[in-house]
Length: 164
Figure 1: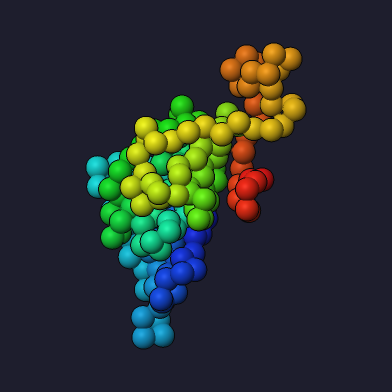
Figure 2 (figure 1 turned 30 degrees about the horizontal axis):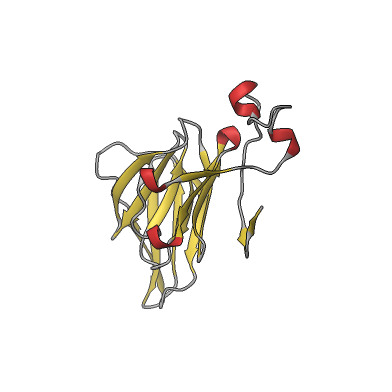
């Protein structure tokens, strides 16, 4: 079952991928026919991939999973698995000139700077504060820490100096 699709807009030839439960497929147009290649998870255990984004080089891919990981892919193979969202699902990924953004359960929005966009590491990740009044308590602390009811972020778009 396909849960989502991501396209590489800057690639010389049209390339896209589909993702879902324990599967990632790379698609390309070869001699007028659509061809699929399976992604190799590497460690043998597939993850449920909920979102994906092509990075700045248009060859590397970052994927968010149901168990709070970000997977980095290169050449059709999962190269790195980073546990970044405290076992909460990562529902949204966005890559642009500002860097790579991931968001999901627990109301967390994660950011890697543009300089790290092809070599993401867990220690380079920083959590961006949400500017929603409902997301903080009376003392300004995230409600996820005090009440466990922060909003779940299902999609993210970055434009100029702001994100939605």
